[in-house]
Image 1 (cartoon, rainbow over the protein chains, first blue to last red):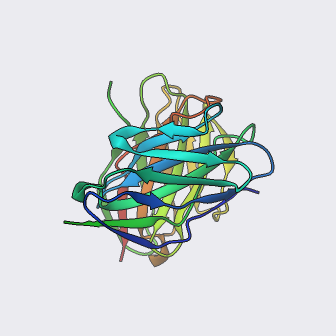
Image 2 (tube, each protein chain N blue to C red):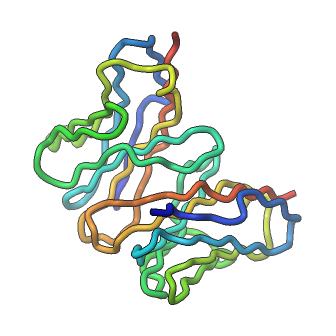
Length: 114
Length: 113
């Protein structure tokens, strides 16, 4: 069975400061990992994914994430936060060769204050 | 190209009624998945369809069903609605077997009263 944990319900950061949203996962085999962002009353917008290769993945809007196999983590990062980054962030995992089902973490609300 | 289209955006139903939600995937995408999002349970997988066949199913009661048509459009149906079925229902399309590329629609907000 696959699972995802996002240990922080909310992350607060000042505009211009770096941000990190944490994610750890558990799968039996190799993972595909994803980050999505959700704005109020909207669906999920894709930010980035890790499939294979370079452990540092760069995505949309200046976000990046680092895949760490030994720590089974896939933390989302951004060097300089913007107020407009305030939203709900979801980490998701899909086990390779296990169908198209995504398992999501509980979500982390990012609040960027001016 | 057009994104994933879900209709209707909002829906209010009464307990005991049934409801049908629609999802049109991105052109060329043959896999459609459905997810339920609630404040208490978060995002939960309902089912996935590919080429009109259900490939995977989540842990939901039989009141939740779906189907996919030959043009890849998908519908999900919930019968005998309960208050707890109130949720945002999200549809995602992808190329089956691809290593990513899940695109979500804006969702249908279902309220059961």
